[in-house]
Length: 596
Ligand code: GTP
Image (cartoon, rainbow, N blue to C red; front, side, top):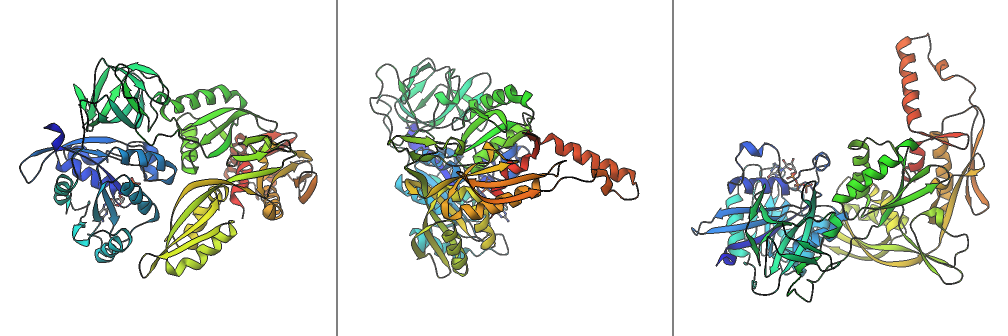
């Protein structure tokens, strides 16, 4: 039977522990790619991903493997993204598998997010194959990592495979373990169709292409299918698999992994986690675990040149075709004019979108500081969701903000600095456990707004890069929050308003005004900069009036230096925004992120 020879698995690994390299080795070993084709890593396709060295998009590759038992197997490798912003996507790809390779760097050991994903995999009853990678490194300490795997996850040390994705050592053993240890999918092709969407991409000819794991029944060309969350109906044009190139097949049956195309206009029609069934004799219950991706972080995006507004809208529309979790709506700022308020899954997602807009669509942007969604209760008991500090009503009964449960893994030498940081960030201590003699896992409840500021950077710098972080949203809790306004030359600049904890407002206000003083160039007149809560000014600085021409700075009339200065000034101008009669550089709108 065909299903008996199927193995569906994914790879769980921390960033840089070698997931892509290992995947490439497996593709090579199974003949999916020749060595020449391997020159570039295949699984990470987007440029941005490669530059940042992280995997964002999921992929699914079908490999043919002749195992040492002489049988032919169909291995479906489902790639998972390695960043906390995309943990829901990870959970859906795990749900499409029966097993997981747990890859841990032999020199670094288990990291917080790896552990979180292992727990997820265990919840889904996946068979875990532990792999200690990079054993070729001089600094490798596989015994210590095996001990961690035993102590922390309860893995039997004898089951650990030692490997090097670099030299190819252990790859055959891994492939055999996939066949021997991971069960084939338990399925029924005669039931009504239920297929789990675990990813999708947008193709300009074929529309949105959902990547699916068929759980029950079968799907083939010509079928009328229905997306169970929306009830929308489509006709299947093609079904296929990735080898890794797209290859059409006749049918995808229960247990199999592949894709289909059905003229879906947007990826929003093919939501990750949704269930596909047939229109006729369809399933009555969707697969468990679907939820709509909810943006957690918001910011304003404004074109530097207001003539670019329509281009910005088009670019966002296009990005959204491929990214169902990006949301945006028009926003008008007194200071910055017409733009968009955009919602993202997290900070990385936000940075990726901004970078793509600037790089691929060549739009110069002014970005306002990111914020979370606040739950605001008004005096007449109305509850508002506020995603823009400017819209906070003057009279509020209470404000609640999202909290996360954060786990930090760190060598025990650094417990002190990590605790200090969590305290500073309004954290509430939960637990501390020893993972091994030298490593500790700390749990804190922290406001998400503090995490999106500079928590991660601070964590890394205070632990010399040794700490790793994972977090999940828990609940909204009331906090003593106020709106901090910034006035430049007597006018409130709406795009600079932020919501802060009352205890931190003075400190923030002082720091933000002095930072702005550094950033706003002197002009022909004096510019007062104030921070205020309501009508109460809590900090004030002044940018002195310009007396000298910028060129006076050059001594001796050095012409190249003069040119450079002028060019620099011109360059600066591009990113300036005229607010009232003051020119404000774009960095000023992000200044709030660079203080503390
Ligand atoms: P993400 O795509 O961000 O999840 O990273 P990744 O886990 O896919 O890591 P990747 O495969 O890109 O490897 C990270 C770095 O480690 C690269 O520079 C690899 O060349 C290197 N690397 C991977 N496996 C090995 C190994 O077995 N030995 C050594 N020495 N280096 C390795």
